[in-house]
Amino acid sequence: MRIILAAMISLLATTAFAQDNHVQRYGEADKEKSQTEIQAEKDAQRAYQKSLGNIPDKGPSDPWGAVRSDTPKTVTSTPAAKTAKSKTKTGAAAN
Image: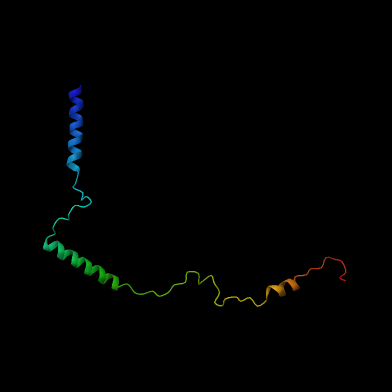
């Protein structure tokens, strides 16, 4: 029974180890790139910059423009004038 269990664990461990790709760790030096890889990166960078240049400038946008009126509302009265006009009648005669 122990032999079967040890065989199963070793089979699982070896298959998991075989699937492990080398992951570059912190502080580890980059591997050297070939001349074709360097040229391919430069071409990709040029194509990316060129594609960014093809995007037209949209200009400023106002997402609330359809909701907002064209002229802003201005307040013409002062707070003191509002309090003078806000007297209400209570049904009694004013003295």
